[in-house]
Length: 462
View 1 (cartoon, rainbow, N blue to C red):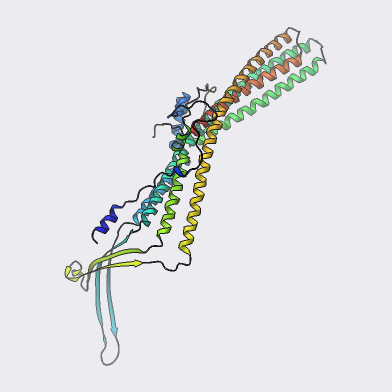
View 2: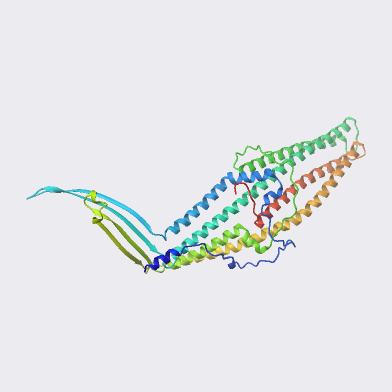
């Protein structure tokens, strides 16, 4: 009898075992989108962009972004919930005291008068529900898993925020570069307008007349001014978006990079089987599934009887001076047994509901794993096709530059057609802008790849 409580005290609840074996999603030996199967991934992918300012902005966002503060508080609440659930298995000790002074009056024949009585007491009470069947331990184990899931969600949120900051930083760099290109395009259009106006003033008529050509060149100048204003608006929006991510007031004061950086070589993709233990969202889904399994056990054990030990000690006296006198001490020891008999189907219904939640959590885990594989495959495929597309786009841009220069030289020498000049310049401007946008697409895809692979990163506050 004395050994039983000590044995129960030794049974401390712990986190549920890993349950990824319940995932029936087939795991391939290598990725379908790449022949590379190098082990490991970049452990600090933010620094792979070789931009100290970007690393500092990620650091600032992680420490100042209010969404991160909200996520951190959720983890703290889950931790306290696990502690509260564990406290239910421990003895509960309460101390109470009372003081009572009462006067009673007697009225009537043959005697009248009153009496004065006093009562004082101190009571120390212990209540302990013995976790004989492990129901409370199952509940605490589930709470620990839920706290672990919240911690993994917080880790995933940090990685997501770092990715958002990187994308916003590159969006600002692209906006800066697009503004620069728009200014160059405007200068080109103005120079073309000057050349056409010179011909018009010299009355050099050809192919429809210089007046229409002049109006067309003026239209292109006005269009270039409108495009510059559009690019500048995008630039301000990119600045504000980055400032908001870092918890700053969106005043559009950040300057950002002058141009987008080069895209580094493709990082190692690791093995598909490693992804299950590396992605925080997969691990969080697994912890939630494990918690649901423990919650089923908790509900099933509610059918068994519960045992409670109670005890109290204290003093009761009519004189306050004797409140600590052991001669007036009282004590009691008791044990209670509670066996559910008829609950109207509540216990069985709770078990069925929790089994449904467990099946839902398992389906969510399967979907999370499948989505994670899909994200990696899409990002790896994007690496291949975007690289090819950019290579072809840069070749087309260089050819367009040569064509525009040749058309301008021919026109200034009086041998070229103005429509050819306009088309060549327009194509050059469009391809230069598209090549910049494509570079940012590659950088964004690289960020998505790092995120999909579950790569880590380090900042000063970690």
